[in-house]
Length: 95
Image (cartoon, rainbow, N blue to C red; front, side):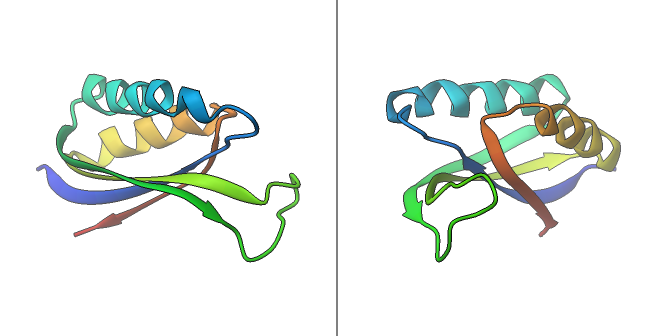
Protein backbone atom coordinates (compact mmCIF):
# COMPACT_ATOMS: atom_id res chain seq x y z
CA UNK A 1 0.00 0.00 0.00
CA UNK A 2 1.43 3.36 -1.03
CA UNK A 3 1.82 6.01 1.64
CA UNK A 4 2.41 9.74 1.48
CA UNK A 5 5.82 11.02 2.54
CA UNK A 6 7.65 14.26 2.84
CA UNK A 7 11.39 14.29 2.32
CA UNK A 8 13.98 16.99 2.96
CA UNK A 9 17.43 16.92 1.41
CA UNK A 10 20.35 19.20 2.15
CA UNK A 11 22.76 19.44 -0.76
CA UNK A 12 26.43 20.36 -0.45
CA UNK A 13 27.22 23.43 -2.50
CA UNK A 14 30.95 24.09 -2.05
CA UNK A 15 31.30 26.34 -5.11
CA UNK A 16 28.70 24.39 -7.12
CA UNK A 17 25.62 26.62 -6.92
CA UNK A 18 24.99 26.12 -10.64
CA UNK A 19 24.68 22.32 -10.25
CA UNK A 20 21.60 22.50 -7.99
CA UNK A 21 19.24 21.88 -10.92
CA UNK A 22 21.24 18.81 -11.89
CA UNK A 23 21.17 17.41 -8.34
CA UNK A 24 17.43 18.02 -7.95
CA UNK A 25 16.91 16.25 -11.28
CA UNK A 26 18.97 13.24 -10.13
CA UNK A 27 17.00 12.92 -6.89
CA UNK A 28 13.73 13.23 -8.82
CA UNK A 29 14.77 10.51 -11.28
CA UNK A 30 15.85 8.25 -8.41
CA UNK A 31 12.46 8.62 -6.71
CA UNK A 32 10.48 8.11 -9.91
CA UNK A 33 12.53 5.10 -11.04
CA UNK A 34 11.82 3.37 -7.73
CA UNK A 35 8.07 3.77 -8.24
CA UNK A 36 7.36 6.90 -6.21
CA UNK A 37 4.76 9.35 -7.48
CA UNK A 38 5.95 12.94 -6.94
CA UNK A 39 3.37 15.48 -5.88
CA UNK A 40 5.46 18.56 -5.13
CA UNK A 41 9.06 19.80 -5.16
CA UNK A 42 9.93 22.92 -3.18
CA UNK A 43 13.37 24.48 -3.49
CA UNK A 44 13.79 26.17 -0.15
CA UNK A 45 17.15 27.62 -1.12
CA UNK A 46 20.52 28.13 0.48
CA UNK A 47 20.52 28.40 4.24
CA UNK A 48 23.33 29.04 6.69
CA UNK A 49 23.80 26.51 9.48
CA UNK A 50 23.84 27.58 13.11
CA UNK A 51 27.22 25.90 13.45
CA UNK A 52 29.85 24.37 11.16
CA UNK A 53 29.47 20.59 10.91
CA UNK A 54 32.21 17.96 10.93
CA UNK A 55 32.78 18.41 7.17
CA UNK A 56 33.37 22.15 7.71
CA UNK A 57 30.17 23.04 5.86
CA UNK A 58 28.65 26.38 6.83
CA UNK A 59 25.63 26.23 4.51
CA UNK A 60 23.56 23.94 2.32
CA UNK A 61 20.77 24.00 -0.24
CA UNK A 62 17.44 22.68 1.09
CA UNK A 63 14.97 20.84 -1.16
CA UNK A 64 11.65 19.43 0.03
CA UNK A 65 9.76 16.67 -1.78
CA UNK A 66 6.23 15.36 -1.27
CA UNK A 67 5.56 11.97 -2.80
CA UNK A 68 3.65 8.72 -2.56
CA UNK A 69 5.58 5.44 -2.32
CA UNK A 70 5.69 1.96 -0.87
CA UNK A 71 7.75 1.70 2.34
CA UNK A 72 10.15 -0.75 0.66
CA UNK A 73 10.65 1.65 -2.26
CA UNK A 74 11.48 4.47 0.13
CA UNK A 75 14.10 2.33 1.87
CA UNK A 76 15.69 1.55 -1.51
CA UNK A 77 15.86 5.24 -2.47
CA UNK A 78 17.27 6.17 0.94
CA UNK A 79 20.02 3.56 0.56
CA UNK A 80 20.94 4.75 -2.96
CA UNK A 81 21.06 8.40 -1.95
CA UNK A 82 23.30 7.66 1.05
CA UNK A 83 26.00 6.80 -1.49
CA UNK A 84 25.73 10.22 -3.15
CA UNK A 85 28.42 12.48 -1.71
CA UNK A 86 26.55 15.65 -2.78
CA UNK A 87 23.70 14.94 -0.34
CA UNK A 88 24.63 16.06 3.14
CA UNK A 89 21.42 14.98 4.88
CA UNK A 90 18.15 13.30 3.99
CA UNK A 91 15.12 12.92 6.20
CA UNK A 92 11.67 11.45 5.55
CA UNK A 93 8.42 11.51 7.44
CA UNK A 94 5.03 10.04 6.75
CA UNK A 95 2.24 12.57 6.30
